[in-house]
View 1 (cartoon, rainbow, N blue to C red):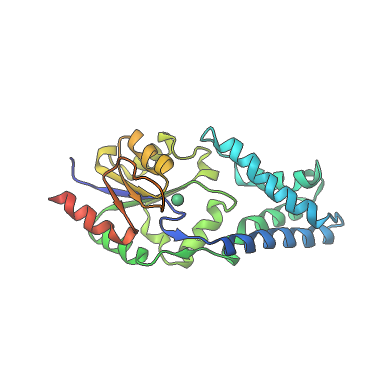
View 2 (cartoon, helix red, strand yellow):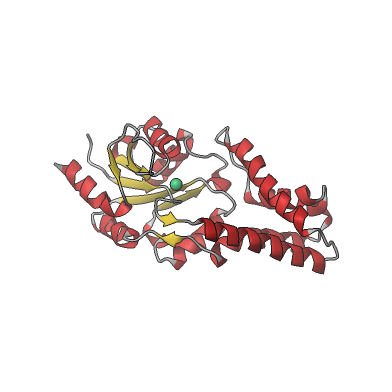
Length: 246
Ligand SMILES: [Mg+2]
């Protein structure tokens, strides 16, 4: 096995941990803030319709994601409005539309997930070993623009040589194309790179299909996929990489 020169990471449930409570608070924030914004713009809508549209956006996104394709964030934000009332997004002044998109995308900054314990120290340790680091994230309702700010607030964004978010790349894991894009940016061959993530199909399967090694962050009640190693937390990663050096 060639010497490992780069490590790429999944984001959600690998570097950051979310909870149902925070997710529900973000939903409430998006809905209530959007309702206020529309009311002020003279386009009042029913709160129940906003909640229904919020759920339907996710269903539509999931249909899109099945093909490992993603839509630009502005489209998801406009879709939310249009599912409340067809044509609503286009009927609003550009400034209101932009504010609505900001409210939707920035909910994650108001009700953030937590940084997984040990992540900051682990990334710093890997950088000290002169490894190049990458982030490959399948986004949901929170776009790359907001997630960069979240990671900056945790003090870890500066550790990454490249950070890819699917609302910007238009392609999602497990498509090998997004892994290849990261490797090209890092100027590292696939066999000299390890990807770390908790999703057996998207992270482990996708990375291995791109010719990389993969480390799985264990999920309860899921069988371990075939991969280099399974870890309970990213904090165990330096040990795993050390054992590879032999
Ligand atoms: Mg994940």
